Amino acid sequence: MRTRDPLDIPGPLGSRGRHRRRSWLRRAFAPLRLMLADLLSRLLDLAAASALLLLLSPLLALRAALSLFQARRLFDAEPLVGRLRAPFERLRFAGRGPLRGLAVWLNVLRGDMAVVGPRALVETEAARVPVGDLVRFAVRPGLISPFSLRKQVGIAHAGESALDREFVYAQSLRGDVGLAARSMITGVLGGGEQPKEMPPVLNFFGVPVVNTSMAQAVDWLIDASAPGAAPSQLAFVNPDCLNIAWSNEPYRQALVRAQRVLPDGIGIHIGCRMLGQALRENVNGTDMFPLLCEAAAGAGRSIYLLGARPGIAAAAAESMRRRYPSLRIAGTRDGYFDADTQAAVIKAVNDSGADILLVAFGAPRQDLWIAEHRDALAPRVCFGVGGLFDFYSGRIARAPVWMREIGLEWLYRLLQEPGRMWRRYVVGNPLFLFRVWRQVMRPERFALAAATGAAQAGASDGPCLPAAPGTRGCGS
Ligand code: UDP
Image (tube, rainbow, N blue to C red):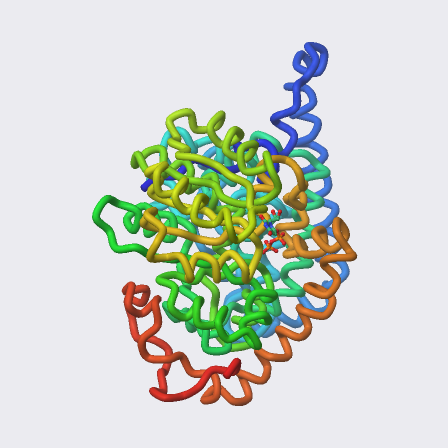
């Protein structure tokens, strides 16, 4: 399945400057501005490379001596494809040991590479770039690419070519400096190399979280909502949800029995690293929503939006309908109803003929509600989406892209609603990390039960995490 570039959607997913309307004067001078921006960015690269090489010259001399001693030559050269498809050789100090990568700054000095730009490709990769993506060769390949930055925090859902296209069309000096700064921040916070192990199912306090990609998760949803498919429940978990599941046994059970629990947020990413494992992607509901709407429109699946304040689900539905005119929205309804109205709400959902039900009551209420009424609900897939409709209706602004790229979306939410969010983030985030640390210390206490919903739904295509039958989760 091919999903559309979500960066094209204005609003919650953000976009850089290119969506702004430009006056005719600005448009007339655009080529000149582009040339100037290119020149400035080259000058900045030159300044950065010269300053760094000068500053590190004693180290470089030592490294060069070591290379000569070990390999009888200074550099190893990797043939790559650069700007305008011109070949160049990326340098690395020859031999073994540290600082070999520093030689790449000579490439920057020489103009083969920029500090920021699309990833440099090898010839075979470059030959496969489709015509629509050739624009990536209009700029120098970079040491830091927008794709690598987003990949570090698991939000490169748009795919490399879409991110490269956006970079080329919207490149600005300010954007480049910002990207370099964010990359340094994620580099420091990310703590270096990714752990090697990437299990198909992650285990947080006995809750099985499927380690999948956004595209695979959307595919799964489309398959699971096909006519004749068995009813299923999906849930997203962030550190706050897992903290709740720690002490709320019914919620923990609902998650354990769900067919898919997906990892939402930077906290899970950090938790994974503490467990010595790599998170494939941050598969959160907010990024997934437009992708799901597009896939659902393509596959003819209808969706029902239940939850949030009156009018909010309808407004979110309207924004998606505008974006994907063939999307079938079976119905919407707010999430403020009493117990007496419950049967009528379920009947309305069922009568609508929806294939997929999104429930936005907040966690854990939404997931418990789905678990309790799963048998009575006709949509084949039901899942909780928290504050999603608030974002897509425009009621609450989502964090800007640059904050998401350094994993600070939670800080934005905290600043928006400090009174409600401080407990979740200020207390909750460290508490979650402390609990993960406890799991690292005593993994046997937190083993997954053998028969979880995820296991039943065939989430793992490799060996599952060690399961000790009879072991009890932390919440029990
Ligand atoms: N909500 C609802 N019914 C309720 C309580 C809450 O529909 O009885 C909605 C609320 O309007 C909001 C969402 O549930 O749209 C919860 O948002 P929150 O950001 O707290 O959810 P989270 O993403 O943190 O789980």
